[in-house]
Amino acid sequence: MNQTKGAERPMKAFLALLSLLILFGLAACQSKTDNSRLVPIKLKNKYGYVNATGTVVVEPEYTDATEFYDGLAAVREKYLYGYIDSTGRMVLAAKLGSTRRFSEGHAAFTSGLSYGFIDRAGDISVKTEYSAAEDFSNGLAAVKYQDKWGYVDTIGQIKISPKYKYAKSFKYGLAWVRPDSEYICITKKGEQKGRLKVQDASEFSEKLSAVKLTDKWGYIDTSLKLVVRPRFDYGRAFSEGMAAVRVGAKWGYVSTSDCLAIAPSFDDALEFSEERAAVRVGAKWGYIDRTGKLVIQPRFDYAGKFIKGIASIRDGKLWSGVTKSGTLIWEPKEE
Image (cartoon, rainbow, N blue to C red; front, side, top):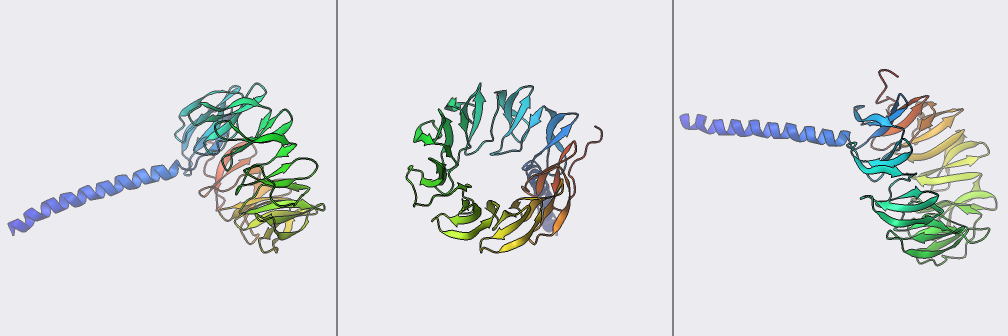
């Protein structure tokens, strides 16, 4: 009997230790989850960030702030931009004239009137010798040099010579470029794919691209085969199997099967993300679900897309985040 009690003591100690480890583990996971989604807030004309629970992670101290991309957000101190990480630590000092978001480990920035790229360490990866630049995608970035567009790689080497009037980003190894009055599709080798020429086109998304043919928009796949007939006045990128399209003055959504999934009834409409899409009714933005039902009534002046259950919004002077149920995650105690 004494031996049994003796054996129970180490077991109780082990269980107590295990419970503590589980609690610490849960706390660590919760902390990680909280800081994995940060949205900008604004207080007394200064920007900071809150996490998904509404806890202020980065105190409002910046004159401008963007969403996080690739784990970094651009912030402005007086007239110059730098980058912070999700803890609020300034990882790239505020010394850049203007910036774009990080994509594939690089971000475009300006020095004077010229564009170049920096990497996540703050080192210049592409020299500032271009008059315009787009984000990196598929390992290449569209850049403008002496009024012509071409493509560079992440170490600044020109991969497709600047010779186009305009060039869009690569997706699925394909990009739209405009050598003259119409767009053609090219590969990463700079070779034309097929013989299709269009009046305008969007980047490929979910292996589909919106194209303008005979003054109407439809959609083609990566083989340049027509998937959605051109009958819309404008079409945005596909996301989660649907794309926002405009018929006359109203917006709805078309599916990949060429059916109007949501009838045109909104004054503007954006892409779906996490089964929610921002739509505008009059001057205000709200959110619909995949059936077209308004699940968050239009009341915002700006409505971003949902990421990890939270969307960035602006309501008058208030910058905050909203949950899928329509609850604001943060409101200032005083302004």
